[in-house]
Length: 95
Image: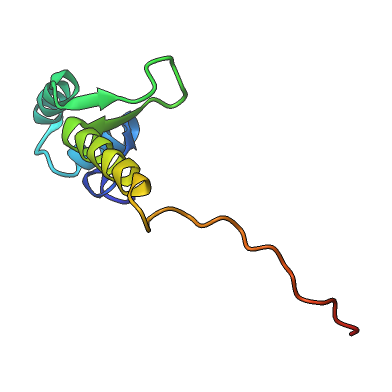
């Protein structure tokens, strides 16, 4: 399974598997999982109850928001927009 740290979003199960492989015993695993789940750095992406719930980090969410702002700014500048389609004015071919 890919490491959730290398993916922008992850499920509770993926996080638990990642932490389980990096903790010594069940007591340590439980403490670490509880600390991560209570962290202000963890963001629930579908709090409406999507199944399964997906999470990301506050840093990843901020990075994506910043990227979207930059994309919007670039789209407004000359030369970065998508040009309108060019009409096909070529004569039909007789194939």
